[in-house]
Amino acid sequence: MTTVQGQTLTERQKGLAACACLMAQGDLQRLEPAVRTALDNGVTINELKEAFSQLYAYTGFPRSLNALGVLSKVLEQPGAAWQEGKPWKRPAEWDNARKAYELGTKNQTKLSGRPFDYTFCPQDDYYLKSHLFGDIFAGTQLSAADRELVTVAALSGLEGVAPQLAAHKRGAVNMGNTQQLVDELCEWLGSEGYTLQSAWPKGQPNTAYAKYFVGNSYLASVGAGISNVTFEPRCRNNWHIHHKGVQVLVCVAGRGWYQEWGKEAVEMTPGTVIAIPEGVKHWHGAAKDSWFQHLTYMKDVQEGASNEWLEPVSDEDYDKLK
Image (cartoon, rainbow, N blue to C red; front, side):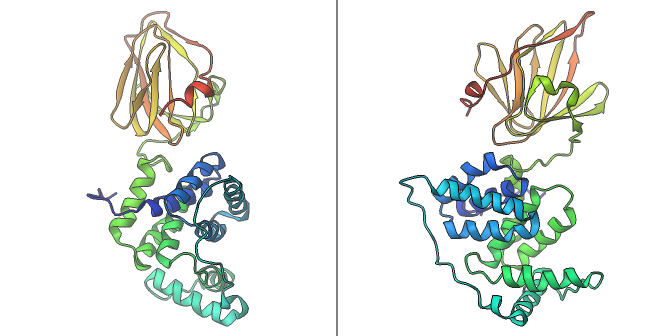
């Protein structure tokens, strides 16, 4: 990933990207505050409707409809002064299949950088040209450049779509964004915890210890007695104590927290190293809006070493962390 010096993403673009990424993941709990933030930062109501509608083509109708439901819920709040945006108009292409196909062919050619025909499956070739890049792109709420930023953000939040993500990152430049902006977008989604971008393996669901965690975690052995633990947003382990051994944590991705009993929580970001003294009651886990990965291993282990698992970290205490 290119390191970007200087920022070109606007707060409005960040708002669209955050909503698209969380919508793609189906994370409705985090999507609701992200929608409010986007509206506060200049995204219009009709732009969000357009974005969530467009993304059904990439994420399916259930997640599109769920995201629109979140937007509708947010708009029920009294007193909000958010912008409605441009009035919605029915595109003329919806009433002329040939015009829709011609528009889609033009848009797909521009996005791909060359004529694109999916002869392997004529059905999908027609759907792409006539519907996705025709009917959907005929809407006027979002520019072609914005549409591709929304698509890149959504695909960045999904697993198993690397070829499509790579194609749309190129397409985002062809549709009017700078390469710097696209690189910055992907870097920002990772740094803010909307996506998990890490060279370390996520591993398998941590089922053996699930009863000691709030939320979902994943475990991967990386050798030499070192494990990588991945926490989804809001996931944290219970208060616990290591007897006759020192646990070392090394944050490698995302953002998280470490807290000892009776002390303030310490934020963990990539590069943070914490050695947990023997016999100290503590917990560690992800920030509420970010994935979190840390390596962990034990040192100075004595005979009879053990772990003592205690009560969960309450939502009330956890939600106080900022």
